[in-house]
Image (cartoon, one colour):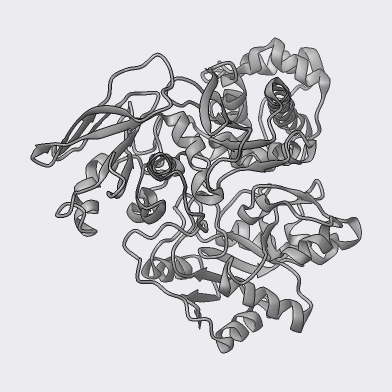
Length: 550
């Protein structure tokens, strides 16, 4: 590695199955960094418009050419692996990388063999697990002393759960294994959950969010907990539901032959699985924390998108602080690999906002003008639904104000319209609010709001006496997945809009949901934003700060 060179990191391992929908591998991405700073990042789906796109091997040449990265190829090259392999081979044949197979997770970049265009080039592999925990670096800076680093997902390169320590300035591997595969599989591979949700296996990437939304309608049951374990979570009922129907009738007197999300018994099953996940994860983290008395937790991987579990971790008080990136799932792997490599080069990493999806749109800039802020506020006060496409897009699966759909949060009917009519989502999935941090304190009664709320990674109990004010974003269990804006530096446009609504209209929160319709990625360009806003029949659109009626 050369400290004077940029780092180009690529997550583009090919899937095992050639299908329209990602199966084992998803969310390809690439990141260019220099001096600890992100220069360019592309989550492939934002550019291709194919959800969870895993075909970077088909388009890498054109992507690099579009940004002048073929002509100027003087950068350190890093590849992220996957459980299905450690080889990247482009369809055009001009890019090829192979790394040796390993029986453990290496702490250091592993030199592999690479052909880049017409010559051999030095290149490295970073394991999937390490890239996940590396995704924390660009948002929180270098790891704090005496920290525990945990990756937890459906499957990395050699594990679905790994733990690392950072002590005396050194990273050490504590453990890696598949012991918790049964837990993550409840959300992305369990036949019973898929049947209840009404999803096919190829829709696995959308099921976790749906499952978390439905779980709030049910209650944990110790009896169901034991029953599920005794029946191995009915994980093999893909071909026939008969065994489940017979067991449910025998043990619970549930005598039905159809699975509906409205059924209270099925809701309790999903709620029990969610609670089981939380309990087992917290128990494991407590054991790891006590083993060496860690002060801080860095947590990443797809499981770190489970906001109910995240909230339990934070509220447990096990750690002085908990750090989770806004892109803990696979869309953050290239960023994590680049950041880890840059950290090894320079010993530090600059802290970034989450607005890093800038491939091809680096020239976007937002002009904050009061007349546009006022027009947007007036449209919202009239009950209109307004989309925002400002500057660079968010990295990760959640819109945080730059690629968002906004509406008033005080009307459940309006929230249902946004979610089910405009976005075509299921009835049981909640929408989230965005608000100034001071107003998060108002609605929750908490004196302080954890920084993970900046990335919409926690849920909060809303005071009963204030739920009516934001009933559109309060879930059935009385909680809300709040995103906070602390100051103008967080997001200039959203800060000014929220401040005006608060000061002039006493409106303390807005619905904030991602700017996309069901089955499509979040919008990326202004041209795409205009098309999507019209297709979704929205009322207004903000393009780089300028408000327009539709």
